[in-house]
Length: 196
Image (cartoon, rainbow, N blue to C red):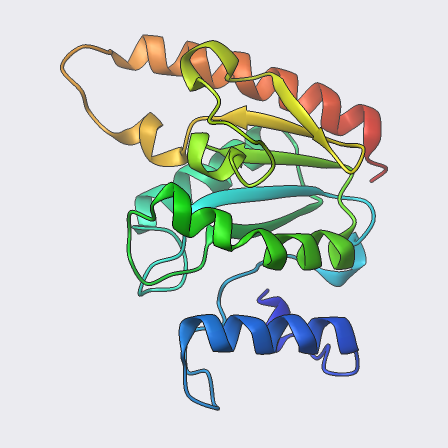
């Protein structure tokens, strides 16, 4: 469910955040199709994992259906049901620069203040940079806590697209082992911190 259209108009913090996103995206008053930026349920506030994807696209949810399906399958397989999904850089461009992402830090601070997650998972190095002063090395740091942000552990993993993109030098078995390694750890931390 899109938090901006889920009947939460009475919440001033949500309204303020919505206005900031509107300004950033330069959308019209109706916000037609453009507020599909944060997904989750209000009941999970204070008891969830915040999943931060690299950036939003024209469609409002990831780059393609196969990415969305891959992410949903991962969450289902690892029994992660209390989650909020958002974007590191809510721009209409697919590849946001590091500088653009860092401009989103105030928005992320506001979102974290509202959602109060127990754990944060950053999908790729760019998303993790919202919380770090320097770029992490995903090859060495994936599946690990890369920092604590306001006492919230931030874990780094690959973008969902990575697992379904064919490359000449990495086979499916290798990618499956990376996915298992990362999500076993994420699931363990999730289960230790979140009450379902």
